[in-house]
Each structure stands twice: as structure tokens, then as C-alpha cells.
Image 1 (cartoon, rainbow, N blue to C red):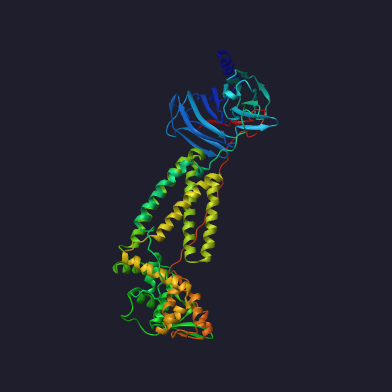
Image 2 (cartoon, rainbow, N blue to C red; image 1 turned 30 degrees about the horizontal axis):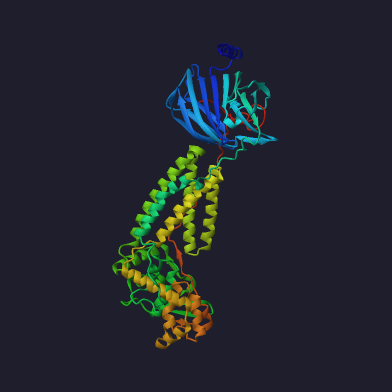
Length: 599
């Protein structure tokens, strides 16, 4: 051994290598019964008089997965970074705030799983790069020890090779039954040492690509448990699991509620489309008339507001006409900021009237605040956990991708709710782009799916609770039960009962029409005018046929506009990888290996 080292130092000085070199590089490989490997690398690195921060170790991925990584410096645990660099795992040891020089001993321990056992012909092989061909410094002495599981002991044949990538220069291998040993000296930069172990396929099966499908593992439930617990807590608190009781048909609208207030009670949301029902309600009350001519349909304001209207009905009438008296039905528009104020006002009014125990808006805000906090902690903990497999460098791009994906999901749900075809298409394209960005950041379908499922659980769960959240009192529950009963009756449209109600009130169809619009059953209800030979409403001045297909859609507009955004695409620097990546009986032809250097 001493003679080998003396010869190594002599060769080093003879060929004039740099002051940095590796005195001793020993790799110990423990093969487990399930075809996985536990690796220990002992590197005695001589920095000479150079002041460096440490070393980095590049390990090719090659369909393998690193886990349980531990790094030691001179026998003591030390800091390191693990991240991906091109097709490598890079282990960067040392600190930018400190320096080393002279002889430093590094020990790197890690587990490998994946395609370690491969097949070629009628044999299975474990081909491992004891020393990779991408090391940039000379190695004076290299040794490999491979510990075999019992089922392979005395049942394998082995040979080894040294040199640059593709070299078949042989190195003797000692087969000691339970282990294999090999050693060599004077490896120049980019020269490696590889062992090839052959055995009968019946002794150990071929390895598979490592699985990153965390969503299939029990630990995944541990990560999502906090957000599921939050959903359950707020679900109970905000009454989303509450049952309004048995639903019986109701034949008339509730007396103490306007149609917009009813819209809020039915699903705890105020929808922009419900303004159409409010306009028809104002027509029934004698404030609006619809007039038809050859140019289309117009809305005419018949009188100004009075005390018979609720404050919110006053707001709707004033916002609809402004200072005008006539308005084309194609120009029925409301400011989006005004609509937000109207929703808040409706909430407050129903709290005052005793239908809600407290503001639904404030209850939702409390939930969203908690959901965002727990969601960030859940995703953060999961990202930290998977960074052991992906490297810490993926965290920032993944966080950005998840942010884009979450925005897209909420926009899509909102677009579906408002039946905005353009918004739905844009949101789908946005989600596809975000998903591609997420996949590109991870380069793993399984990890991307694991994150995607977690984001979907958080986003969809939060949306559903937000949508269904309510603080209904007993009075509110009774009113909601009434509305659901009315919807059931409108949907079934029992003509015998409707004929009976028309005898009592000739305007029965007119009074229920706003609620048919509210429930999305307006076409169904309009057909009854023709089927029951009922006159069209007094507030509609036009032909019967045009009324039967009568429809209009309020739209929103913003008083301000926003600009666009731009992005830039850069290119990442390449890494000097050396030659690697084959599979066969030659130097550099196995898994593991790679290389490294000082930094």
C-alpha cells in the first residue's frame, strides 16, 4: 500500500498535475436483497495550498433515485446542498463564507434505487461506476468494495475496467464470496473505474425506474390531513353540511324577500345573472315597461323610485337608467364596482332582517385567511419533503407554477359560475400552460401529479366551502326551504294547479316569472303563457311570439383597464459532464459514477 502511494506521488510530479488532487477514493457498495444499493464514498481530497470552499459531487440520475443522504467532513456532519444540474444530482459541500486547504476527508453516504439491476442476453447485471469519468482532478489511489446479499454470494462473475469513457482496460477483481474488491492507482482526470457483476436472472429481478408517485403513499395523507381538518372544522362552523329539512312544493314567492335577496339565500351567493330577475320584478311592480319595434326591444322607465321599493331595488333602478328614460335591451349594463357594493348591501340587509346570524362575507374572509395559511404550510412542507428527491433548486419555479395554477383554477370556477365562455377558454389555456411549466420544473410526471392533486384538493375544497358557507338562522333555513320548494314547483309546472292559481290571480305567471329566471327555468315558464293561453304581461308591449322567445342578458363593465405583461426566456448554462451515460462492460458504463471538483 505504501509503495503504491509513493508511486502515485511520483507519477503526479512527473506529469505535472495541478496542486489539487485526490489522494484516496474508496467506494463501498452494499447491494440489498431487493436490488437497491447503499453507497459510502470516502474521499481524501488534497487542496494543496489553494484556498477553496469545498467540493461538489455530481451523480448521474440514470433512472436512479437518491435518498437518505448524509455528508461528513473530517468525520463530522457538515452542511451541503442537493440540487439538480442537467441530468445530475449535485451535492455541493462547503460554505461560501469559509475556506479549506490541505488534506480534507469527505464521506458521502446515500441510498440508490431504480434500474440498478439490468438484463442483457441470458444474464442480469449490476454495472457500477466505482469512480466516475467526470472527475476533473487526478486520483492517486481508488478502491471499490461491493458487499453482496446472500443469494448472490459465490454465484456471480465479475470483471472491472479503468480509463476514460469506453475504455476496456481490465482491472483484477477479488471475489471473496460475500464481497468483491478491486483497486487501482493513478487515474488521470476523466478516467474512471467500473465493475460489472453478472448472475443468473432467477437470483435477482431487473430493477424498475424509481417511483415518485407520492400520492400513492400513506405519507401523502399525512401532508393533506391539516387542510382536510380545516375543511371539516369550517364546514361545520359555516353550516355547509346543514340540512334544511324536507322540501315541500311552494306555489308563491316569499312575501318578505325581493328576488335578489332570494338569490342570496338560495345558495349564499349573489350572481350577476340574477339582475335580470330583479329587472323583471321591477317591471311587475310598475316601474319598467318593455317595448318592441322594428329595431329591437327597449326598456322604458315608467316612474321614479318611491317608498314601496327596498333600498337595493332603488339602487338597481337608478344604476340601470341613470338620467335616461329609454334603454335598448342590448345596453343593459352595470358597473362591476357597483355590483360588489350591491352584494355587500344585500348581505347586510339579510343580517338585519334575521336571516343570517352574522355577515357571510366576514365568515368567508376568515375561512380564506385560514385556508391560505394552512395551504401554504401544507405545500411548503411537502415541497421540502420532496426536495430530497428533486433537489432544492426546483422549489422556486414550482412555487411560481403552483401560484399560476391556483389562479387559473379559481378563474375557471368563477368563469363556470358566470357562464363566461371566453373566461372558461382562457382559464383552461392558463391551467394547461401552468401545468406544463410545473412539469418542466420537475421533469417528473409522478411528482407533478402529486403536487397537482394537492393543489386541486386545496383549491376545489376551498372554493366549495367558500361557495356554500353561510350563517343561516332558523328563519333563514325556513326561507331557503321555501325557495327550494318553489323551484321544485316551477320545474314540474303542474298545469292543473297553475290554472287554479290563474283563476285567483290573472298575473300569477307574471309574478312567478322573476323566480323562474332566478332558478334558470325561464324558457320553461315562458312556454306556459302559450300552452295555457294566458295573456302576456302588461309590462311587455310587443307580439306574443316575440315574448315567447323574450330574453336579454345584463352585462358588467369596468371603469378602469389593466395592462398586459411580458416575459423573457433565458438559457441555462451547461455543465461540464465528462463522458458518461452508457451501459456495458467498459469504464463509465454503469450507474452511479459521475464526477466532481472543488469550488
